[in-house]
Image: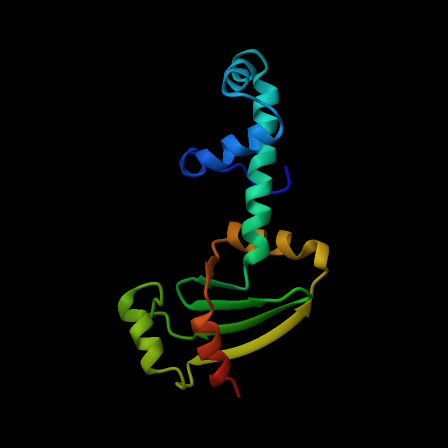
Length: 157
């Protein structure tokens, strides 16, 4: 597997797409039930293949990611060949930006000396792009539309 198997809930949500996936392989509902009972390893392989196809489709569409931790915020912009990062680090132990209060403090004190803004960019290989994005998601990043990235990009020196 290249990525991770979809959860039962995700597979339930994608039930029709999975049926279509099986149909493309000329596997009927009856045959699928038989495969699950008689060849569970083949059924597992089909689920893994479907999961990878779904992930590949999702990851290809990703342009922005965000990852919040107690005192840091990482904003990513991903293109075909580059990954840009805007990082924010709060040098105050009493501020937790994962809470509404802490996030409000950050919004009101973005130019405070205890708020460090930095940016970087790296070149990524086209064939590793989706794997890099998936690794960030596995570490807790969320896919976004990029509004916060674009806002913070304007604030950089």
